[in-house]
Length: 259
Image (cartoon, rainbow, N blue to C red):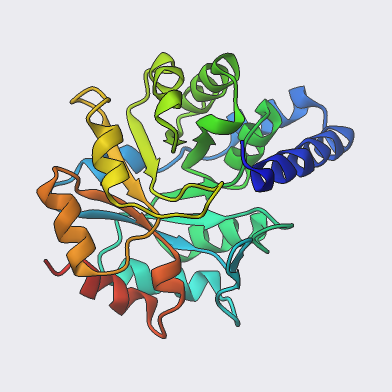
């Protein structure tokens, strides 16, 4: 694990402890199971053509503040109007300046399914995601043991949510496959060096079952990037910073997928 991931996970353990002080796990589970049904995240990604999970995030540890002012609802509507399949919302506060209220605002602003993108290490966070309206969650293989990954994956699906399992290291492939995921995201950025290689998606995808929906994440900036990955058999993408740096995120999305 990289140093930044170590720090983030340490922070998340503190956040989980504080959450469970406020709300017992059983209470969180009941509230999650009583929440309104999730939207069909997987169904949106299964539609024909290029499918983009468009991300709303204010900042990142490597880039600092990316978008200010940050208006999640406005961004979400722009994405929805320009062809996004789903929307991802960063809810981590300490490192990405996000919050759960951003997730709620996005979900109230559009009809598209919404992913809670955070660093999930505990069932309490999975329940919390559903309570606040998440239709899907992200699980990062490099911060979880195989047992934790399988458990959280099953828990998310039991709540009706889609689960996007993300990995970077090829050493994590067996761990990911143990969860039998329908949806796998390949992070093209090595968080230890911050090097980005689009080829990485193709290399990892070749180690996954043909039935797996593969999402290419990080470093996607141009139509040439999309074209390169589409030629390699990839048609699902998660893009954030490229859109957040644009004056009109939705139009940037439309331009990117016009291949």
